[in-house]
Length: 414
Image 1 (cartoon, one colour):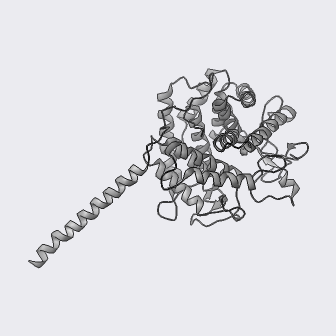
Image 2 (spheres, helix red, strand yellow; image 1 turned 180 degrees about the vertical axis):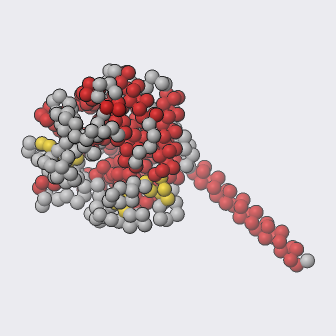
Image 3 (cartoon, helix red, strand yellow; image 1 turned 135 degrees about the horizontal axis):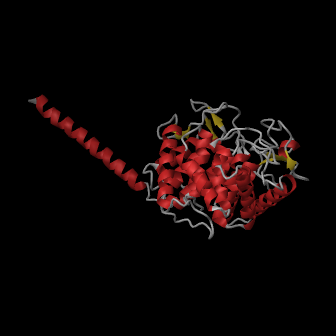
């Protein structure tokens, strides 16, 4: 008899636990605020005259969401602590890199409303980042970790990851507000202050190579990486924080884009991976300046430039961004003979091919630049290339997905 009464009691206890867990889950889902700018709502207007794929928004959204699911399955993985998430880059250097964490945060905050887990994933990426501070500035992210979540390759920051993380935190505040378990706006302010302190050259107002550079190494101190010139991010920091410092940063980069295109790529508009001598007469970096013999060419860093400049042109309408993006788009359209598969994986600034094969990493960003060009057929071909292509690697797939979010009118500004 005694045993018989114990069982229902245990069953009751289990039932109570199940109900409590369900209630906690419901509360956490309720705490995951409904997004203010759900994916596919196209609430963020692009400037008048910006082209969209002819397939229409519903089809473009469907292709983007489908590629997101493939990207998420391949690259978004659990961290080493419960609830943490990281983007699996598996590069030759590291399992996780800060640029990948930034991409993951941008992607998940823009996919909210399509993916019910978006906020939990975003928060997990942020928690992972906060557990890996840079040794030089603890509000920035150490740039690389191994599969066991241990820092590798020196625990300093890389500017591009820091910038995307700050911008994504501002978007999280836009998307969900800052009243939940993470105060996104406060976290964004911390990262932006750290970027100003540690990632911007105080004399030129240009992005530096990371928080590891100092004036004791003038070659690195007066250098910048073109793929870090995130014009829309600087614009967002200025407007959201009401801080004209960032308008000055934006202007410094716009001016340098014009100078580099005019002096070194008048026919192509191509920018080199690295630019040196920014304190006097800026010029493309010499071979093997930091990474490879292609450091002064349009290569594996600068391949992101048509996306970064193009999306600012589409969202802000800035005439300088539009001119720079259009120059790139028009040159490439001619060079590739209106055929996206003919876009090659690297060029000298005069347009000479340096890597004679096609990759989505180099092709997809030209889709973003094409939105501010005037050739609908070229944009449509680039969209078809993106929508119908398979997966490649973390870097190419992440940049392609971000380019698809931009081209499909799902990009956000804070």
